[in-house]
Image (cartoon, rainbow, N blue to C red):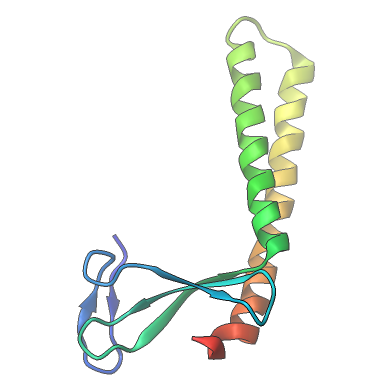
Length: 116
């Protein structure tokens, strides 16, 4: 489990004593900010920021993972080069999408971290 030490009061934060809170920014349509708050001094720590496009990409990765698992089940009944290539291509797509998500989240964190 990741631990965070509060910069202000040095309290050790875990997800047990500082659960993740989601803030929905209504003035910025579709922006969700996740953060934890120090239970002792109430300092907020940004965990994640997403927009609708980023969440769509995350769902797409979930779909590709499920598709790969179906293909893997089919491969248990016999090797098929085409299915093997499909898994490789799906993994490449997921890597590309993950890079896009990582870049978008970094930009969103910079843009919206002041909204905590």
